[in-house]
Every structure is written in C-alpha cells, then in structure tokens.
Length: 318
Length: 253
Ligand SMILES: Nc1ncnc2c1ncn2[C@@H]1O[C@H](COP(=O)(O)OP(=O)(O)O)[C@@H](O)[C@H]1O
Ligand SMILES: [Mg+2]
Image (cartoon, rainbow over all chains, first blue to last red; front, side, top):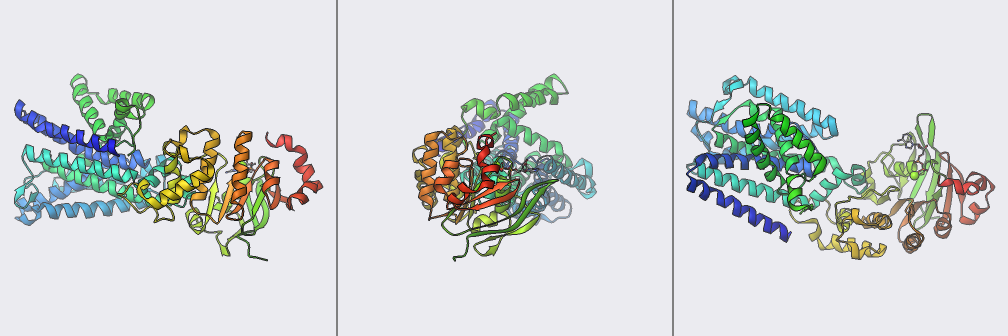
C-alpha cells in the first residue's frame, strides 16, 4: 500500500513534467501525442480490470470507447447543425456516457458472462461488431466516414479544447482510473474477482457467484472506457466507427499484455510501449503488426508480467 | 434421536455406463465425524461434489439441516453452512495466505460488496482468519504467498479456509493426502479438536486416522455403500475385509 502510494507520487511527478518539457521544446505535437497515450492508457486500465484481474478476454471493449465518443459526436452534430447548443453541456454528456455505458455493459455482460474462454471472446466480438455496423450505418452521423466534432464539450462555459487543458484532464482521468482500479483490486470485490480468475469452482465453493462479481467488473470497466471515449472525441476532434472496431479492442488487449496483466501501472507502460512500437515499426514496414505480434508472443512466453514485470521482477497486486 | 445435520437419500450419479454414485443414503448427526473410505475410483470425490452442488445428481435427495438443498447452487449451500476442502490443493497461489482465508471469513462479515476499503483492513474478518490460521498452525505464515507454502502447509491452509466460513458441516476430501507422518499427526489432532464443534464428513485413505477419528464409517465400493457402522463394526465386517481392508496396499495405486 505504502509502496503503491510512492509509485503514484512518481507517476504524478512524471505526468506533471510533460507539459513544461513540451513548452520548452515548443512541441505541441508531443503534448498531443502524450494526451492520446494517456487516454488510450485509461481505456487499457479498464481492459486490465476485466482481463488482468478478472481473466475475461473481451474483443468488444472498444464499444465503450465508441459510446463515449459518439455521445460527444452526436451532441456536437446537433449543437452545430440544429442549434441545440445545450447539448454541448459536458456534465450532461458525461451523465449520458455513464448511463449508456452501464446499460450496454449490463446487456453485454448478461449475454456473454455465462460463457467462458473462446466463447466469451466470440460473443463479445459479435456484439462489438454489431455496434460497429450500427455506427457505419448511422448516415446522419457520417456513416463510415465518421464526423468532425465541431462543438467540443463545455464545462461551465469552458470548452474542453486546447492542448494543455486536454492534457491535464487526460492525466487526471488516467490517474484517477488507475487509483480506482488499484483500490478495487485489493478490495473484497477484487479479491473475489481475482480468485474467480484462478479457480472458479473453488470460488463458488467459498460462497460466491463469480457471474455477479464479473458483471460488476465488466460494468465498471465499461464506464471507465466510456470516459476514455469521451476524452478521445474531444482530443481528436473526430469520431468514426473505427473507434469501436474489434481491432481496437485487440489493441487494448495487446497493450495490457505488453504492460503486464493485473498490475496497477502495467496498462500505462503497455500503452507507451505499444505506441512506441507502432511509431518505430510503422516507419520501417507497413506490416508493422507482424513484428508487434512477434514481440507479444515473446512477452507472453518469457515475461508474462510484461513491462512491469521486467521493471520490478516482482508481482504487486496492491 | 436428534435430527441429522446432513441426510442423503437414494443418491445416484452415472457417468455414461459407470455408476459413480449408486443409491447412496447416509445420515450425519450434529457434532459427529462421519468417515467415508473406499479404494480409488470408488466415487468419494463425486459424492462430495454432489453434496456441495458442483455436480447434479441424477436422482435422490440431499437434506441439510432439515432443508432440501438438492436443487440449490453451490454458493447458496455455502451460505447455509456447508464448506468443502479439496483433494487436490486449489488455492490462489499468488494470494497471501491471509488473503486466501479472508476470502472465506469475509463471507459472513458483510460479503463481497465492498469496493474501496482493502479486504485486509476489515478487523473482524481478519482476526477471524488469523484465528483459523493459528488453529492449523500457520499464523506465522500469514504474509507469505500461498504458492510458496510446502505441500503440507497448503493442506493445512485448505482446512483453515473451510473453517473460516464458519461452517456447520465440513466436507473434507482426503486432507491427509501427501502429508508426512508428523504433518498427518498434526492434522489428525486438529480434526480431533474440531469434533463436537463442527460436523464433518471425512474422506480418507489413511485407516489409522479414520479409526482414530470417526464416530461412524461408511465403506464405498463402486459407488455403493457396502457397509456402514462404528469403527469396530467396520473392522470386523467380512465384506469390508474383502473389498477394501484386505487390499489396502493397492488402495493407493
Ligand atoms: N466428470 C467425470 N466424467 C466421467 N467420469 C468421471 C467423472 N468424475 C469421476 N469419474 C469417474 O467416476 C469414478 C469415481 O471417481 P471419484 O469420485 O473421483 O473417485 P474417488 O474420489 O473415490 O477416488 C471414477 O471411475 C472416475 O473415473
Ligand atoms: Mg477422490
């Protein structure tokens, strides 16, 4: 616990160092890249909750990023085109993201969480692609091409735009979601969730119904990813069906595995590693996914705890 | 006669052509230790799995404290007061020893619907867990990872976990399996000290242990109870000698 607080202090220190460096280098692209990384990392934090702690590999988690993104996009569309400026209210949008994420998570969870392993993977994939196709078919909202977010979310008159503001909000959101998941993982709920991952029959024989515990985890993870989608739309100024394509869910899984399953800081480490690999390798070959896949296999075989495992060589739950 | 804690009536379970449980009936009075012996493959673990709700019987009834639990799911049976230890150790190896036991002791101290406070920060569940760990002699190991314990210690942890959920009835599946002589003696005296406080259904290969502990012994062979009675009755029973005691040497094969 103490050690973890120190780690959080270091994390906050590092996060605070980025804007001054970007200012000093006069490099807003760097800051924007960092924001993108932090937002993706918070979605990876959500994925880690269900996958790292819960053992549930979902190929549909990007749906929640899509929900967050499309709430902003649709609100912006009507605010901009139909003069319904009240829709730009960020608080209102966040409530919508929360409610929709919870409802969709409960729906997907109720349908999928009775199954395990490859079946769970296939069901979440199918449901995810359903949402993807729905977004593609939403011609009013740009269909396949998506739409530009002209009217950013507004909080008390302040639009959620500007490189520095977006960065700070993303950094705060990532830190908060990491801290939340850290607390969850060592709570009673987390203990049962992790136990059900290791041994489901045993967990039942201890008096717990893994299904219910997983449904809660799935819902919390949905909400966190929904919030990430909300930030992503405001940051990129653009939403499209690609946000919720199953390959995005796959990226999240790769990030979590790279960083180290079930570790508090793993998702951020994994996201940094993933974006760095993408950046470096895509300059060398357009088939950059192949070496990333090879690295992933190497990680799975040789350092199952991922980047965090290499850093600490000791597993840390909480 | 007092009402039994557990009574099983005409339980049957087939795996294809194999009758793993064949018309099993038994009744366990409160506070007693009922042992079930029988060679490997006799259907002992299968019987426990049905009592616990992990396997559904084909027919028959399981009555626990007067309530028909045959159709209840495992967690519901645990809430009513059943607990089980496993023949094959099945702990969470990267949980601490204490966390493993907390998993059991928190059940009756508010349950799992707690999301912020660390599980180890609940004093009541924690002291309850520590109490059970001292009973089995693992109090000084509470911070170790369960996976780092020796085989014998893991068996003890299994029992501590079953105890920590405050059970009325414990189903113990070969708790002595793989223990050294000293460890086995320790386990036997632990089970002895529990007699009277908690009702136990003990599955065990170790004859000496069974004869030292049991109030009643049932002998299972090919899924069927071929004899049931006190330790003395069982010792003398010629059928049992043929079916089991005579071949004790092979029972471990
Ligand atoms: N899930 C199962 N499917 C098919 N056969 C099984 C299953 N579980 C147990 N059996 C068979 O049932 C018999 C009883 O097994 P078990 O209850 O494990 O015996 P014991 O615990 O007395 O050694 C064995 O012949 C075993 O092979
Ligand atoms: Mg067995």
